[in-house]
Amino acid sequence: MPRVGRVVLANYPHHIVQRGHNRQVVFAAERDFEYYLETLSEYRSIYGVQVYAWCLMTNHIHLIIEPPEEVARLGQLMKRLAGRQTRYFNRLEKRRGTLWESRYKSSPIQTDEYLLACCRYVELNPVRARMVTQVQDYPWSSYNARMTGEGKLIPDLDPCYLSLGDNAEERRLRYQDYIKTAIPVGEWDFIQETVNRGQLTGNGRYIEEVEKIIGRRIEHRRPGRPKQGQ
Image 1 (cartoon, rainbow, N blue to C red):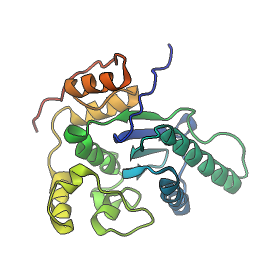
Image 2: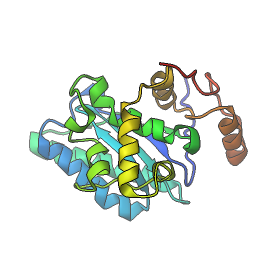
Image 3: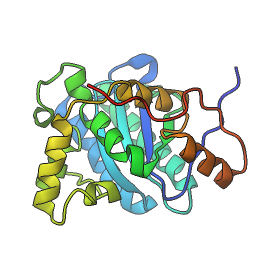
Image 4: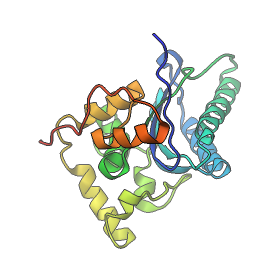
């Protein structure tokens, strides 16, 4: 089956997932996580991207990144991130070979409808995987840096997060409440499916908007927003 052509849009957030080769462990010790975040912090400035959320799991990563007008910078960033972490890992383990799957997955996000939901999805991954019981107990996601403004990497403030309040404290409290709110039925599966298939995370209106931008039709097997509920 041929690969689906990757859709990358300037000034749109993208949900990115990259897994270890054959789902192998890529972060074995605290320093491994720290090294990746230090690299991402450094390269964020070099490539001019916005980093809205992240979560580093033991064998894969989730990022929400917005590329600038020069969309190729997203791919360049991911290539250098993967390469640098691979060299670091191979030096420590005295090994050779690849660390990551050959192709990361990505999905452009409809900002007004899904950006906050995707940030919640990313930051709640360790809770859903039962690695921790509370989102703040996991040190390798963007949640604590978002709440405290401290850490090796501080998330950029996306427009949806900024709309939560008139000041930093109000936004933090409302986002805390949002994280604790029951996730609507179907939302988690929808976000997971769109990024795994390389489709758009958005509704029918968003799909039509993107089709006009790129000048071609986009396959999307599940149009529209999932039904709301608890």
